[in-house]
Length: 137
Image 1 (cartoon, one colour):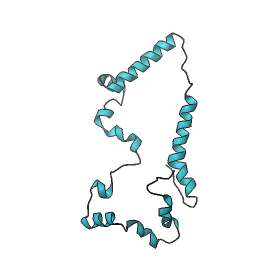
Image 2 (cartoon, rainbow, N blue to C red):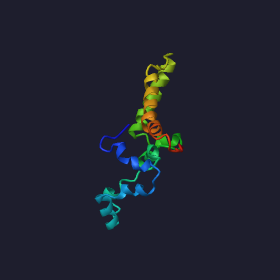
Image 3 (spheres, rainbow, N blue to C red):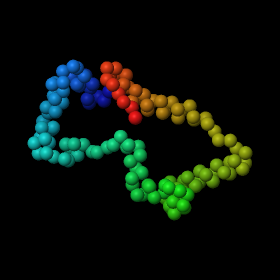
Image 4 (cartoon, rainbow, N blue to C red):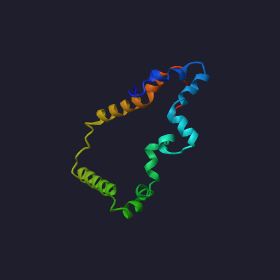
Protein backbone atom coordinates (compact mmCIF):
# COMPACT_ATOMS: atom_id res chain seq x y z
CA UNK A 1 0.00 0.00 0.00
CA UNK A 2 1.47 3.30 -1.09
CA UNK A 3 1.17 6.47 0.94
CA UNK A 4 -0.14 9.07 -1.56
CA UNK A 5 2.01 11.96 -0.32
CA UNK A 6 5.21 9.91 -0.66
CA UNK A 7 5.02 7.76 -3.80
CA UNK A 8 7.38 4.79 -3.75
CA UNK A 9 8.80 5.76 -7.13
CA UNK A 10 10.31 8.84 -5.50
CA UNK A 11 12.60 6.53 -3.49
CA UNK A 12 13.69 4.11 -6.24
CA UNK A 13 17.29 5.30 -5.95
CA UNK A 14 17.49 3.70 -2.50
CA UNK A 15 17.09 0.28 -4.09
CA UNK A 16 19.60 0.50 -6.92
CA UNK A 17 23.19 -0.73 -6.68
CA UNK A 18 24.67 2.74 -6.15
CA UNK A 19 25.22 3.36 -2.43
CA UNK A 20 26.45 6.92 -3.05
CA UNK A 21 23.12 8.22 -4.28
CA UNK A 22 21.42 6.96 -1.09
CA UNK A 23 22.56 10.17 0.61
CA UNK A 24 20.11 12.14 -1.55
CA UNK A 25 17.43 11.34 0.99
CA UNK A 26 19.14 13.75 3.40
CA UNK A 27 19.54 16.55 0.85
CA UNK A 28 16.49 18.56 1.78
CA UNK A 29 16.12 21.86 3.58
CA UNK A 30 14.29 20.47 6.60
CA UNK A 31 16.92 17.84 7.33
CA UNK A 32 19.81 20.21 6.75
CA UNK A 33 18.34 22.88 9.05
CA UNK A 34 17.79 20.31 11.77
CA UNK A 35 21.33 19.03 11.31
CA UNK A 36 22.86 22.50 11.54
CA UNK A 37 20.88 23.29 14.68
CA UNK A 38 21.51 19.79 16.05
CA UNK A 39 17.85 19.83 16.98
CA UNK A 40 16.23 16.94 18.78
CA UNK A 41 12.69 18.26 18.44
CA UNK A 42 9.85 16.07 17.19
CA UNK A 43 9.82 18.10 13.97
CA UNK A 44 13.40 17.03 13.28
CA UNK A 45 13.74 13.52 14.64
CA UNK A 46 10.11 12.54 14.90
CA UNK A 47 8.26 11.03 17.78
CA UNK A 48 9.97 8.02 19.30
CA UNK A 49 8.12 4.81 18.63
CA UNK A 50 9.35 1.34 19.22
CA UNK A 51 8.66 -1.92 17.48
CA UNK A 52 7.01 -2.93 20.74
CA UNK A 53 4.36 -0.25 20.23
CA UNK A 54 1.40 -2.62 20.68
CA UNK A 55 2.70 -3.40 24.18
CA UNK A 56 3.92 0.11 25.06
CA UNK A 57 0.82 0.79 27.16
CA UNK A 58 2.04 -1.78 29.69
CA UNK A 59 4.71 0.63 30.95
CA UNK A 60 1.99 3.06 32.02
CA UNK A 61 1.24 2.74 35.74
CA UNK A 62 -2.47 3.34 35.11
CA UNK A 63 -2.53 0.20 32.97
CA UNK A 64 0.09 -2.04 34.58
CA UNK A 65 -1.39 -1.87 38.10
CA UNK A 66 -4.04 -4.41 37.15
CA UNK A 67 -1.65 -7.12 35.91
CA UNK A 68 0.26 -9.70 37.91
CA UNK A 69 -2.42 -11.74 39.62
CA UNK A 70 -6.03 -11.79 40.68
CA UNK A 71 -5.19 -9.69 43.73
CA UNK A 72 -4.18 -6.85 41.37
CA UNK A 73 -7.58 -7.08 39.70
CA UNK A 74 -9.34 -6.90 43.04
CA UNK A 75 -7.22 -3.93 44.11
CA UNK A 76 -8.09 -2.21 40.80
CA UNK A 77 -11.81 -2.99 40.97
CA UNK A 78 -12.74 0.63 40.21
CA UNK A 79 -10.85 0.51 36.88
CA UNK A 80 -13.25 0.64 33.92
CA UNK A 81 -11.59 -2.24 32.10
CA UNK A 82 -11.66 -4.41 35.23
CA UNK A 83 -15.36 -3.62 35.74
CA UNK A 84 -16.09 -4.56 32.10
CA UNK A 85 -14.04 -7.77 32.39
CA UNK A 86 -15.77 -8.83 35.60
CA UNK A 87 -19.10 -8.25 33.86
CA UNK A 88 -18.04 -10.41 30.90
CA UNK A 89 -16.91 -13.18 33.27
CA UNK A 90 -20.15 -12.94 35.22
CA UNK A 91 -22.25 -13.00 32.03
CA UNK A 92 -20.29 -15.98 30.68
CA UNK A 93 -20.79 -17.83 33.97
CA UNK A 94 -24.53 -17.21 33.82
CA UNK A 95 -24.63 -18.40 30.20
CA UNK A 96 -22.79 -21.60 31.13
CA UNK A 97 -25.27 -22.22 33.97
CA UNK A 98 -28.14 -21.77 31.51
CA UNK A 99 -26.50 -24.07 28.95
CA UNK A 100 -26.03 -21.31 26.38
CA UNK A 101 -23.18 -21.69 23.92
CA UNK A 102 -20.77 -18.95 22.87
CA UNK A 103 -21.43 -17.74 19.35
CA UNK A 104 -18.56 -17.79 16.88
CA UNK A 105 -20.56 -16.10 14.12
CA UNK A 106 -18.01 -13.30 13.71
CA UNK A 107 -14.92 -15.51 13.83
CA UNK A 108 -14.43 -15.51 10.06
CA UNK A 109 -14.74 -11.72 9.99
CA UNK A 110 -12.12 -11.43 12.76
CA UNK A 111 -9.74 -13.82 10.98
CA UNK A 112 -10.18 -11.90 7.71
CA UNK A 113 -9.44 -8.61 9.48
CA UNK A 114 -6.23 -10.08 10.99
CA UNK A 115 -5.09 -11.44 7.62
CA UNK A 116 -5.73 -8.07 5.96
CA UNK A 117 -3.72 -6.28 8.65
CA UNK A 118 -0.74 -8.64 8.20
CA UNK A 119 -0.94 -8.37 4.42
CA UNK A 120 -1.15 -4.55 4.42
CA UNK A 121 1.47 -3.90 7.09
CA UNK A 122 4.04 -6.65 6.49
CA UNK A 123 3.61 -8.76 3.40
CA UNK A 124 2.94 -5.82 1.06
CA UNK A 125 6.42 -4.44 1.78
CA UNK A 126 8.02 -7.83 1.18
CA UNK A 127 6.08 -8.30 -2.06
CA UNK A 128 7.10 -4.82 -3.32
CA UNK A 129 10.81 -5.38 -2.63
CA UNK A 130 11.61 -8.93 -3.77
CA UNK A 131 15.37 -8.27 -3.82
CA UNK A 132 15.47 -7.11 -0.21
CA UNK A 133 16.30 -9.53 2.60
CA UNK A 134 13.79 -9.06 5.44
CA UNK A 135 14.11 -10.46 8.92
CA UNK A 136 10.79 -10.77 10.70
CA UNK A 137 10.82 -11.14 14.46
